[in-house]
Image (cartoon, rainbow, N blue to C red):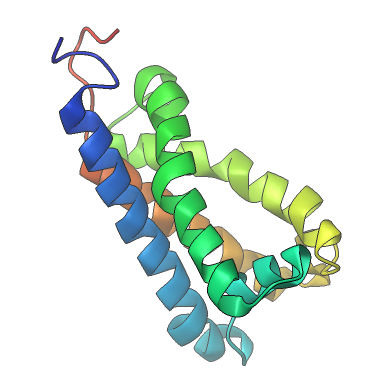
Length: 147
């Protein structure tokens, strides 16, 4: 059953891609965002604030969602149904997740829709696209027949 979306190979690649994508996303917020918007973007702190916990727990939750939850969703939806090569499927898959984050999660976190900031929302979009690119690139493009 090597052509199954949940073959051991695909699941391992998805978890690795999700972890690497989350790492890139997190590092972009810490090191690239300051050059673009004048300050870092700490997703772990936002999650921690929402949950009423420490930044360490927020970081753990961020990596759990990015390394496990999103990759499983990608295998179910992006890998199987979206068009194009793997890297493009990953980007397309992450766009709705970005939109949900900006229109639902950020207001819940008290940050306003799209952070109430075009520059910050564009940095977040870049981070989500890089995450999707890495996830899709690592998982790859499916063979013709997948189940």
